Length: 307
Image: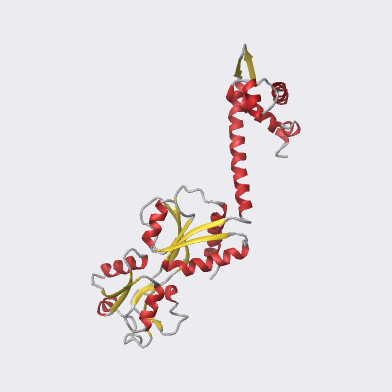
């Protein structure tokens, strides 16, 4: 059995002995170790004697009032550090797992991703009804600033930062459409050239929004100027403006629910719908709390699930 080589340690209750040894080795004194551990000094001596018997070799030597580690003791001190560090990590993990019954998930979502984020969180909470959620909603730039300040556990957005230093998980598809009002003159046309859109009144999000960045990038790539008629700070307002005939927009279809709400259509523009995804982002090197890691694992399963 795997434990056969350490059976004697298990039989002799070695962990309390190791705790005493670590204190003596670190402090260099039986008396100071006893004070730190709230033990009588004879009890400390007995524990060290038992540990020595268990190992079969001396781990400490005392010259006058000085306590020194033997070669075996130095090896054991390293092992103690490893064991206690592992147990500390385990205890933190257990504490976090207990938190799954009453923890808090801190996330921030871009405005364009808020409905997606809300739906995913709602599904996640069906498995963990005791979890609370604190979700900040803002435009992309505000999320980047919050990431820099480590204000949240996770960030959900369409356009993750291009620079390094972040872990980015691509989750469910988020196709980008050219959305127009039903009855638009281009509604029946096929394979509309992108350049044709420069003649249409365009409704866009405010600067700093991920969708605004996407729109500006697309027009730069096609070397045409957008005819921006209106800037609005919410997708709901953009959807309503489109329905009212104020213009067209380029944004994720899910953002305005064009396929579920009357009055909106997706124009057949060459290259559209664009292949895009929702992303979950967090700073590289960040140790995610178990609640946040569980949510990431949940989203990964959504990615892996068959369509």
